[in-house]
Image 1: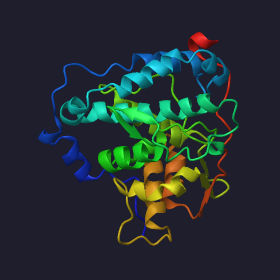
Image 2: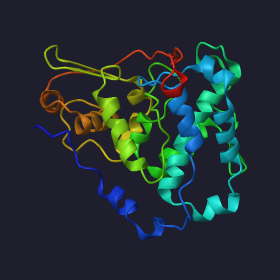
Image 3: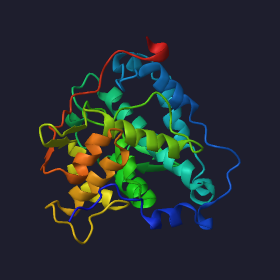
Image 4: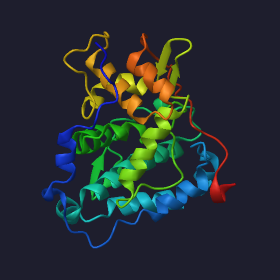
Length: 276
C-alpha cells in the first residue's frame, strides 16, 4: 500500500503557533543590525566567510555579542515574544560559531577547538550558553520546528549555508521557510536521483532524524522498511522539494537512504558585500 510522504504539518504545531498565550508585549523588535552588517560585509552569496578580514575587523561582531549579553534578564524572561526569541537564539548560535573561529583563527575546523560545543561562552541576558544548549534546549525543545536544523550554520562546508542577513522577529518564519527550501533543493545536501534509484542526503538528517517527527512522521501502515526517523526526514524533504519528479520518486520509488560524508572543513571564502 502506497502512502504519500508529503504529509501536512501537525495540527499541534498550529495550535501552539496561534495560542493566545504566546503573545507578549515588546516595545519594538530587537536590533540585530550589527550582526546584519557583519554578515553583509564578511559573508558571500555561497555562505562562505572571509575569516581573515573578519579577524582584522571584529568590531561589529564584538558589539553584537556584547549587546546580547546586556539584555535585561527580567525583560527577556517575561516580555519577549516567541518570534523575537527564536530569531535571537538562531543569530546567537551562528554568531557564536563565527566568534569561536575568529578567536582561534587560523584553524582548519571548528572540531579542533577543545570543548567547543559545550563551553558556555555565549552570553545572553547575563547568562552563559553553549552551542549545544542553544540548539537543543532553547531552540528545538522550545520551538519544536525541524526547519531550525536547516538554518544553524556551524562553520563547516557541509553545514547549512550562512545567509547574508540576520534573522529578525518580524521575518523569522519566512526566513526559516526559505532556509528549508535552500537546504532541500541544493545538491550539496540532498541528492535524489530517480534515474539511478538512489537517495543521498545530509548526515544532519541522520544525527537529528528524530527531531523531524515533530511535524512529519511515519504512518502505522509503513511498509517500505524505513525507520520512523527516516520516514519523517523523507516526508520533510518531499514537502520542500521543487522538482515533482523527485517528489514522486520519494513517494513511490524503491531505494535505501544513504548519508553523504560530512566535510568539517571551514566554510571559508572571499568576502561578500562591503568586504569585497
